[in-house]
Length: 194
Ligand code: G3D
Ligand code: MG
Image 1 (tube, protein in one colour):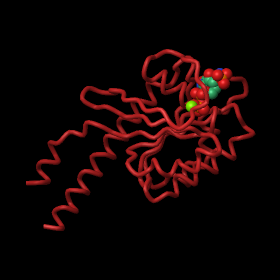
Image 2 (image 1 turned 90 degrees about the vertical axis):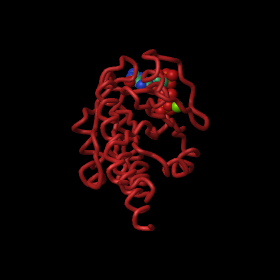
Image 3 (image 1 turned 180 degrees about the vertical axis):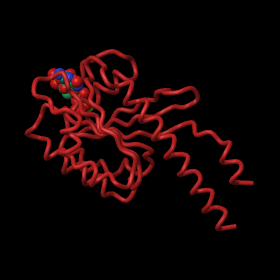
Image 4 (image 1 turned 30 degrees about the horizontal axis):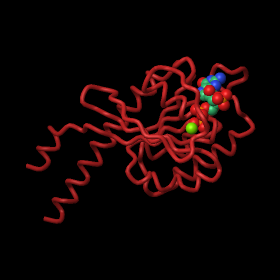
């Protein structure tokens, strides 16, 4: 009976965590998702939260967490209820890509985020010398570090909005599937305790 119910239940909400080094473009992306406009951003102290309906009856809550060195220690506090991770990279900042990878790998190793789907946004594609999605995939070693989950690397530009519709579409699909499987496994656990 319980299982039959899950088959028909609809996942309506997902929590999406936005992480990445400071200045990668997280807050600009969030504004663009929400309003399709470019806002002047100031470095995020703490975090921003916004809810966006990406499909009919499906809302995603985006948590945009500050990426400065001090804030990174607090990233792990936000991982527990995430249904998706949006990791933002400044594709033109080759100097800090290794640092970004180091932080990314640290998050992926966290038990709370095990199996949670990942979209990497290879942002700032408009800037000269920006690395393309294939190169970002290779440099972050996605195949190795994300082998236990759904993942995708989307090239984009937060200023023009290029690539953002595709990113939201893929993220919605991944997050819905993840939330559904989480719900099913919770129901199995409940049945086991009966
Ligand atoms: P963060 O929230 O990850 O720290 P922000 O990053 O969203 O505050 O963006 C940092 C700077 O990068 C901002 O410029 C913003 O306009 C710029 N930026 C964000 N996305 C893009 C992009 O796709 N292309 C280009 N060229 N710039 C982008 P300022 O000058 O305000 O620091
Ligand atoms: Mg910010």
